[in-house]
Image (cartoon, rainbow, N blue to C red; front, top):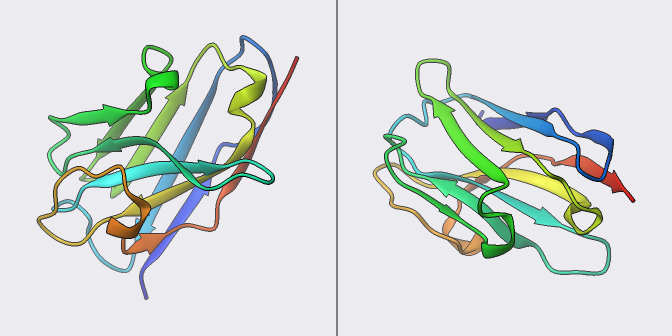
Length: 125
């Protein structure tokens, strides 16, 4: 059974940092692009960041560029999202997602096959 489990969410003041982690089990994702999405209350799920299977290529939502950084460790089957200079508008449930094997970067949720349950990030002003 394939599972993606996020951790690292929490409550932080504006300007602070959090590091989200996603641990994959059930299969290796070393050959698949992975991404992070988020969903705020009353809003649609939106793309945050994606990383290629090798880690050589990344893509970010414009509003998080320069503040967030996505990385992966294929040996450990994990992907992380380092979030710095957090703003109240970053408050949302953050989801880890994985595409199928030998897939490329994508900012579209429908391209992702596997999803975690999400972790809450709350940024207070």
